[in-house]
Length: 132
Image (tube, rainbow, N blue to C red; front, side):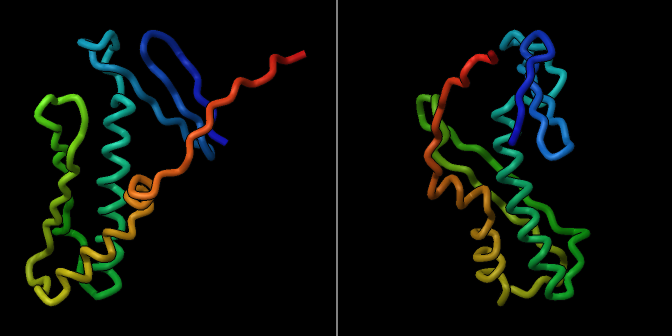
């Protein structure tokens, strides 16, 4: 279970499995910009998950991931109110065979974060009973 706490200002922390994830809002949104905003972490979770799957693919085929990188470009709709596309671009190591391009894309498509967005879970919000 993840526990969310509020240390002050617009900062929000999430504690999960021995780790604390710090978030904050930018100064223009009333925060101190002391940590990434929650939405930035959402985007980072997609990009890092894709990167993990790309890295595993390379390592399993004997390619060093040292020159591998993934970039994420969030594209908004014309009104700028919502994301319309999350564009991932994979920068492959020198000498990476073109014959593996479709396979590494299929591997990245297995990213658990991406799959949770494509087939989203139901989100239930409940009020906890007050402590007696």
